[in-house]
Length: 139
Image (cartoon, rainbow, N blue to C red; front, side, top):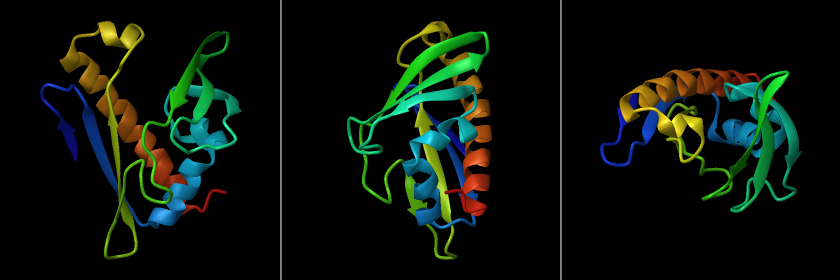
């Protein structure tokens, strides 16, 4: 399911997985796995020791060598084992929700409907990868 929030530009993509919320959290809580599931992330440069606490950062690069752009992802809200948004289901699995919009950089120059379509495609694939890692028991 996909939702675009009018006014904010936030694009929301959902995916159900048989993995438990704890298994998904374990992937998210290991900042070094970020390029394994985030589309476009090519490599990690560093992970804050307190990742995924509020204020912690992932320093990563986007693109393909030799055309890499250094970027930083920062935690704005976190509830250990639950936030980054995890919704447990009765069958033991969970629904993963990813909300995003560009806040800076070249993507911000795109008209919102174009930007939203690109984010939907990217995040649909990112959640597919995240679910596979969690279902497979990534450590």
